[in-house]
Length: 419
Ligand SMILES: [Zn+2]
Image (cartoon, rainbow, N blue to C red; front, top):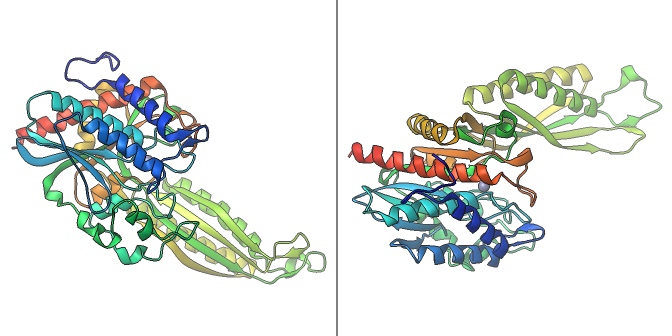
């Protein structure tokens, strides 16, 4: 099956690439994609999507959280949902999010050409996946999953002091009504999302596509070490209580622990006070971000980090305190759907690999809502994303579209067989 030679009624991957290029042209600058949610350019991208949907026998609706849904009615009201997000970070890449929406549009288009499908097909463009402007990601899918509390968001503002509620209102969305976008998971047979990997794993393995079996959980904590600030020259080594040395030792320790536990751990940010060349600092605080595919693995890593911090603090004569920044439970996608995806993605691409996403996605929200979900990743060149140089090989993008099309057909056939 050549991904670049479409049969009648099959997705045309080259049209998807051409449409992605068109969107890049219309909603990007030389600095990259500018489709930040709740901005004019984002609305422009959506107007483009709507104009494509106008040519199809689908009903289009924007829900109370600003998610755009296109529905192709089938014999059964139970729906297969395909989606992703048109919004981008500022100066973003051309594929992040857009790929899944435009590929889903193509799949919908193909089904629309044939007789009414046995299942209803729905395309969704989630609102504000990136959280680029207000710092809260997955807005629309969180609402759809029934997990959005407007009170958590009432005080949230952008860099210019505009509240989220004001920005939403500018696009016809009332923050207080957003929870009404909650779906009934019983209506949804499955959720599929095609996305670029945004990391280096598939390229390293020499594979075009991968099947995502879940999303890493996150433990993000601030660790504060306090010691005694003193003179760099006058304080002999044995008499020091240096919190920065303790922080440095913890950074090395959590790296080893992550390797042992099969997870990842990052200290991407550290503050030292006072921060001058001639003083031993009195305080050092770092942000530890640990991620793992399983709850047990994540707990093991966090316990080990606590134990290491205590031991190091005792040895260095400093105190240590922890405060929670954010915790996210790992998500495991539906094993049946993951298996089905592996079979079909492998058949289209020749080979594929199962991987767990380190980045958050709308699919994780659907899975949390109880919808059987799976994602397919397309190899990212250099593992780069959220940047204008983000790119993937054309042939890999086309294989991804063909794989999504195959998988959607397989899910529809399976749903039909199950009645
Ligand atoms: Zn994305």
